[in-house]
Every structure is written in structure tokens, then in C-alpha cells.
Image 1 (cartoon, rainbow, N blue to C red):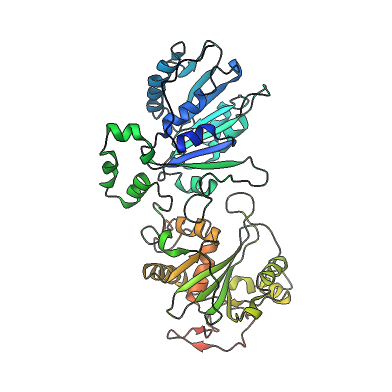
Image 2 (cartoon, one colour):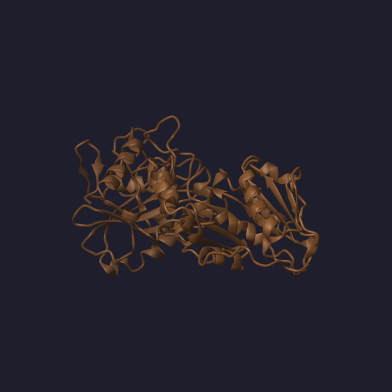
Length: 466
């Protein structure tokens, strides 16, 4: 087939990068108006007429059938001009070419919808507005259909989206977006997974749109909802819509680049234990102005959502000791090591988890976990963030990933949902409260360091002198 004269050219920048990207899975993300839908369609079209014939097949997905209307309209506008011999079947929602290529417009919402396509071959998969999906289960399942019996046919998964939407958090996690994430254009490689990359698009690159509509950007500047405005105007992935810390967490102000913590600062650490679920250990420091820095992270995340590494307490203790191996020489003296009181319980075992840690050389004390401690701890975190007195090193990636995204509890809006991945939150809560459980608290198990020097606080609880 003779290739037609070019009637569409990619804008320099993100569109060119997206169309020439050699990585298996690529996301084109950014603010509104960057030309992402056009780039998605042309990602498929650029391999039409290259000799692959019927082996070049694609499926472009939206969450629902009605949502396909816009992308279909854009395809008809461009493809009729670029490929006048191509045919669009309105009832089947499919483009076909005389040389055999085909692009199908389809929809799928849940992982169960994957079975409508099980066994199919689509060397090109496209997903428009990926953040519309509340879960990426359907998206990830469909990757198994990105294959071809022709060895030379390219295989690729391509997606577009803006921040915001039900799927904001899972997309942000998968492509490591936002503050502390992977920069655009840097390939993400994880064991057992195909490589993926995200490419950032910006309205400023779309000279055609801005020439036709010079005031287009001001359309979003007037949006009252601050999260939607930041998402659509700035392409900001650090928004957290509907989260417990919405309007409080601001990564631009509370996430900082690492530096050497002075030995004159007070230092301590806290832990939320987990075996089947992740464990979280954080090292904290307070400067002379009362600003608390979260400066180290040890997080036990396994494969899957909210899954732990199933490491023994002794193995985690060895990791803690390895991290702290030079701390004494640096002048750090840990006055407190706070952990969930439940690790001191002996339930059908000769030793508690706390005792296993102690025998391995890491001593913990019981964090304050009495009545209303969860709510009070949440308020302490909120107050510190509001006052600009809680800072997190950018290397604490799991805290940055999980804490600002936690939803409120559906029964108690003053607390986070404890069924979510709240392990970094709990460790943070124990640490910022900096109080030990009262020695006469009900059902209290003896802590490792009950004989340590303590002082009463104003509520009658004991606290270490930090």
C-alpha cells in the first residue's frame, strides 16, 4: 500500500517521545490539552502500511461504551484524511484497511471483562484516560493479549491520562509519579515485569490548540476545586482527592532532599510490625526548632497490594542493625525505640516478637496505644503538617506513597481506614506521639526496657526523655 502524504505531524516534545518510544509499556500523562488522544491514535496508525497486514491489530479501550464517542470522532477526523481507503464500521466500532490492518474500539471496566478478550492477539493495546479505572486489574490482565504470531510485529501497550479520577492512586503507584517518584523518560524495571515508562505532556507544547484558543489555559485556572485545578492546569500528581490528609499534605513543602542529620539533634525510631502485611520502621530526628524529620525508611513490601515480605523478626532486626551500624560513630544516641504494644504479647509462643527482636540486638518499647490514641495521633500528624513541622526525606518512598493517599475510616472520619495500607502511617503515629504506654494500662505486657529512665507527662502517661 502506498503511504499517503502526511497531514498530521507530532508536536515537538512529548508527542514525538511517545511515538518513538521503544519501551513495551508507556504512559503519556500531564495537564489537559497536550494532544494525548491524537498521539494515542497515531501510535497505532504509524505502523499501518508497513507490511504487517492483518498481523497489525489494535484495541483501544475506554472504561465505558459512551466514553468511546470522543476518541472515535477524533479517529474519523484524522483517519479519513490520512487513509482515505480505510473503512469504519459503525456497528462494530472498527477501522479496517484494505491491506488487512484493524483497530477496534472497545470498553472494559473490571477484571472479569478481560474474559471477553481472553485468547485474542493485539500487538497494540491502547487505554484512553487510564485514571478513569478505579482499579488497574483489567488493564494489567489485558497485557497478556499484547502478542502476535508474527515475530517482526512490534508489541506495545500505550495509555494516556491526566491526574485526578478514581484511578489516580493506582496509576500514580504503577508509574511512580509525583514527588519522590521516577522522573519522566526514565525506564522503570522491576523483577518479573516488562519495562514501563511515563512521558510528561504539557499544554504549552500544543501550539496548534493555543493558536486556535489562546485563552484555553484560563479555562482551568478558574476551577474552584483546588485538586482538580492542580490536576488539569498543572498536571500535578501530588493531589490526594478524598484522602484523610486532603488539603493538609503538600509534598512540595513537606518532602525534602536528604541531608546529614546533625548528631546534636534528638533521634529515635518507631516500628509497625507486619509479617503477612508490610512492616514499617522509621528513623526520626528533631531539630532545635521542634521540626521533626523522617529521615530513614525500612519497609517490608512484598508482591501484590498491601502484602508483606513474610520475613522473621530476627531477619528484620538484622536489617535494622545493618542500617545503624555506623550510627554510634556518627554520634547518634537513640533514646526511644517505639513499637506497637502487640509485639510484646505471648500468644501460643515461648517468646514474643519483641523478645525476638531483643535477643537479636534490637530493643523496642511499647508505643502509646491507649484509648483515642489513634485519633490523637492523627491530630498530632495533622498539626505538625499544618505548622510546617513535619518533613520527610524523599528517600522514604513508601511513606510518601501511602500516607497521603490513605482514605478516612467510613465509621470514624477522625481516623484513617485501617484496612488500607496504613503501616507507614501507624509507625509515623507512634513516632510523633513520642509517648510510651502507661505502665498500669489494662492487659499491658512488660516492655523490653521498663527499667529505662522515664518521666510523667501532663496526662499521667510515661514518656521517654526525648
